[in-house]
Length: 130
Image (cartoon, rainbow, N blue to C red; front, side, top):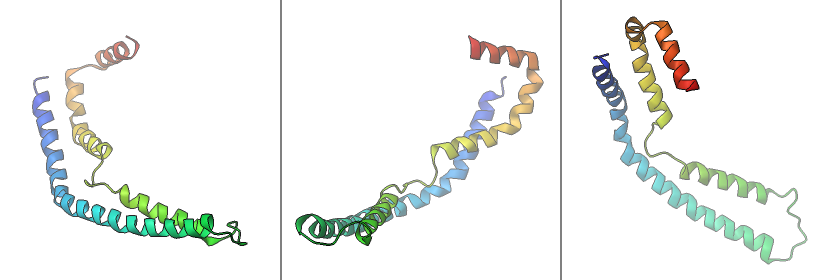
């Protein structure tokens, strides 16, 4: 297939043109992530220190069972995890790979015009079973 390099260049070009506009958001997402980590980090430190003072340093008759403090501890940790797990680029590798597949699927009929189904099955069986 002498057209394979042309098809691959086409696929790379199309996917690049689809993804390139998203790069405009990288700087804003980096700043938002850094700001969120700083703000949530400070809030998390204050909250954890207060929790530690209340439940580990003082002798109280109050039990933690049924108290809302433990629930707020889990909630605030979940908020921090979502901020710290924020992606800088709004596309994942899986989505980019899916775009490549979507762009290349229309060229499958061209491949089937060059190779017969028996050739394809023989190559597939050799690849799978050795």
